[in-house]
Image 1 (tube, rainbow, N blue to C red):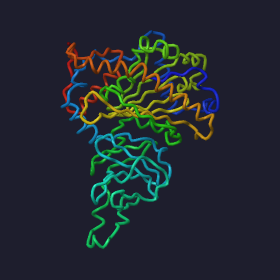
Image 2: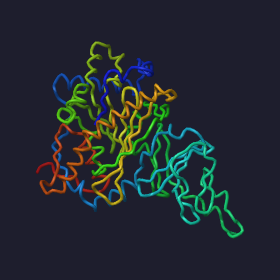
Image 3: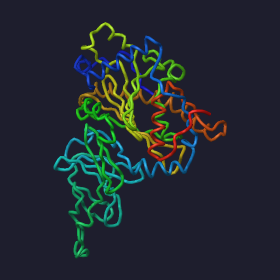
Length: 412
């Protein structure tokens, strides 16, 4: 699903940031994409996969597959934990609990980011709750063991009772973490390594151009629904459904069933096209600025979506809920180009976020919940993805590849 916005969304306190210079993408890439878009509009076509894809419904119903996803995707792969702007200063901290491994991330005094398993090395209590700023250290609420930003034990109450204890062996357990291109990736497996450029497979060029570290985190909302965690990405990865499901919301703004698509290893980019793209036809290519006329949906494998909008950025993350194959928790975050320091600015971004969530909550996710229930009905063995849904097909093929599952047949 792409958030829709009427023209007045682009007015007000942030109008200046949208004029001309706002080009968070390589210009040649914008030109190439715009040419493709005009070709699709003129020929009434879109990006197409090689063949129809039949996705086995066990994708959404099988507990054994869910266990494999949790073991591989949510333990072995780098997961987008957030953007760098969420942790700007030393002592800024956030917690992350949805992979099954309790994690906290902190900006150390040195400026680097550290990630740890959020477990005290004394009796296993939780060391950090929630998020915060300017934290000097972290004290376990059970017995008061205290740790610094690098995970070292700094204080043990009644230290005499622990005479001979090697504190270096009781450091918080570190996790692999990489900060690059304004993004934070964590792997919830001690001792693992992250080669983020290899994982991005060329998509790092787009990420670098977006200047994500210059944005400002406004707010994150949590959504819990009765649907498989992969359906969050599913609803973002095609525009075929716009004409029916979003006929009163998106159709006046966006072209339906039209979207350029490119893959980058397991990741992908799909571009939703606003009807305002027609304004570029009368401009020379040197002046083409694609961004205000699109919603660029970037699938960061395995469970995150980064959406580049004309005046802001959104991130979406989805996680399974315990051992429920038919339930997930999602986090929607909005990032603004400027600090939100006035009531007028806060109202503006509240309206954007409310609009985004209202569309998915009232239109997309109810349908997804029906699909999830229907998957258990026995009505059919698979879902059918058309050639006009290449991003969706690529995502599910990528999932099967990562899980070591065979590719699905291309005929019923």
